Amino acid sequence: MRARLVAIGTGIAAVGSGIVAVGTKELRGRMRGPRSFIALTFYLALLAGFTVMIYLLQEQSAASQMAFGGGNPYLAGQVGQAVFTTLLLLQVLLVVFLAPAATTGAISLEREKQTLDLLTATPVSTLGIVLGKLASSLAFVVVLILASIPLTAVVFVFGGVAPEDILRGYVVLLVTAVGFGSLGIFFSSITRRTQSATFLTYLAVLALTVGTAFTWFFWNQMTSQQVPQVIRLEAPASGGGSDASGTAAAAEQPTVARPPEALLWLNPVVAAVDVICGVDVNPYSTTCQVIAGVTGRLPGNGTIQPGPEPFPAKPGVDFSGEVVGPGGVVNFGTGVGVVGDASVAADEAFAAASTRDTFWPRSAAAWLLASVVLVLLSVQLVSPTRRWRFFRRRPRGEGAA
Image (tube, rainbow, N blue to C red; front, side, top):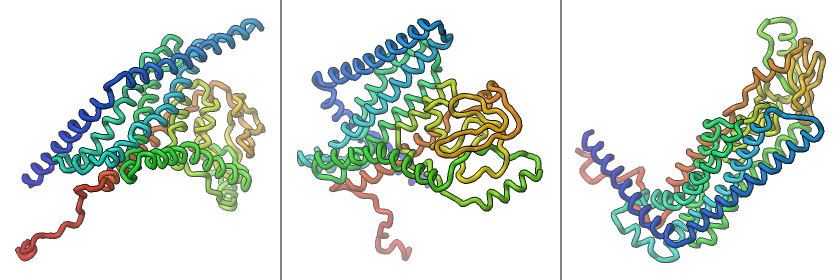
């Protein structure tokens, strides 16, 4: 047992030294010259330009409100939230395109230069080579993300965004960079040309972003047309007649499968929208509506289910932000749900609402798991390689002993 632990420790140390060796060699080649500094300057200038434009638009909106005799005491907070939303979504889009571009040539370029055989002949393990290539390729992307922190901190001047909200946003950005970087190095390991790796990588990126969003939207629209969707709140705790009739009605209603939430787990834009929803004061804003439609969970205790309403629902709030009174109707897409006899105040409805962190933690976990799988597959696909053997032959005479 002790010898096995020593062997495992030696292997981990060898992988670590390989990552450092390969990563250092790659970083020296990538960071030399003015290109890296020009790209960093252009990146920050782009983010700063969008920030200034959003601020000017919010200032113009406030001036128009004051011209008509209106005022908004929460205007500064709205400006901060608008700036944070713009910076987060813009950085997500940039990372989606930059991270794969940094890793698509990590292995295929070694094949084109015919240096992969020399690299695998070194004492560095194949896992160390792949992880070193991935770390060095993503180092500049991480530098871009971290360099934007001072610019993002401008939102603290206006308010409306807490430090933990910014932390959530940067966690999504880093996980997205690692995930799409692993995707790029995977396609780089199975192709011989960098052009082919780049084409396949961005095809997969398009499928994971636009493709999954369109598939979910199409699935949801087809489901809504078959059976109207309703907003259904938790059933009453008492075992009255309405509950019994509701159970019977629920048993008779047709079962229609909503699009699964897991379909969008690898979509970083939806994860960023979830972070933005947590920042927004209004839990019935556009971003929160998107997350509610994806997760099937409304602010508070509500759930979105297909089929007719089996029992009188508790009072709800319309997505427009208005409080629904007794006998009112709650609209969601093509379906409606009738509200019960009780009434609810606006402050009670918003106090019970909570949509924070309902999607992005699952998306981050899914990307980390996918990254591990892609890296392990890349290790096995690099050729020539010292591949892992799960079923090793025993030496002769070992079985008899």
